[in-house]
Length: 472
Image (cartoon, rainbow, N blue to C red; front, side, top):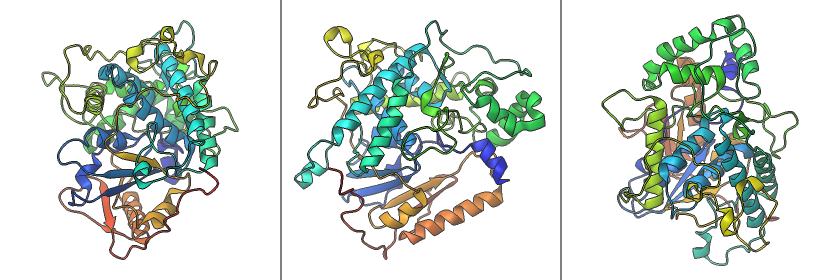
């Protein structure tokens, strides 16, 4: 069963298998107190976006989100999505940003405009990561609460930042394929030959289905109707699910450029380098529609697909994040789901005609050592701090006295049986208890999740942890 689960869920987590949560709703009821939240294996950062976008609702609160990951690829993805959400706040265009973000989030292949956007954004992020290590350390407590860029990397080790640079450099080379047709085509028929999709997709399908490979379209329909929809994924349409299962295409992708943000080694290395050609080793059972595509909203006159619901949800999150919750302006473009096109300064890219760098040029015209590779960013109402890369099970015990909340969830994993879910919950409770956390249930606990809060006997950690003394 463990081998079958790995074949379905993969060895790398590129997206969460539970809906995005506003973590403010699960904090202890002490609005005046500073709150710290530890996210272990947050994958693509859906909780970061949701919590940051809604942080201005209600009473203001001092919130710090600590994020720990095992490898640099998930950290790079979260930084990428945060930068796409925050860059160029003077020209919001939340619908275009949401379309591009979702395509990068969950599609195995990219359209040419989105591939160019990724190349330019990865280049700027890489230069920013390199610049961050040379900044002077803060001299006072107030400066400790500020950082330049989409998140705070000062707790990461030097070797972790080197690994981030290696990953971003690989993404920077993902230029669009000339002449690629934009947008996905119709759902292909199941044929005996290799299926289209990102590198490794065909191999993953064949290994999972075995003798059922020729009937994979029927298997996809059965798993959607009998496994996913009864667990809450009623908005996922058969058409979009079959297209994703057959080709890895979701959220309007489908170009000729493989999405490098979802390609890696079977077990990503801590140094960010690949020892084999990067391939897809993520989920091939549930799909990327769960994070934002299960809620209501939008046009209620007709049923909406998970893609439409995701676009509406992410558009609203970005609008609230960029404008502070202000209503949309009359000048906002219609929410047609088209991704931002290369060279359009409204999409968060700089205009090369105004003296800034073309995102397709990568590092040809690097900025000066003291210049900032990132443009103006929208202010974040919360702090996001990435911890050193490492094995997540060891983290709660080391940081138990610093964080007030730990949320774990495994909703909508069709390959998990009740006994396996019970074993995972017991393991999570044991790890949380070892870190000084205690169970915290109640009516506000989200379905299929576990909540913990800091126990009264939690030890106070070393105040110097986890700063690397060799890093500024």
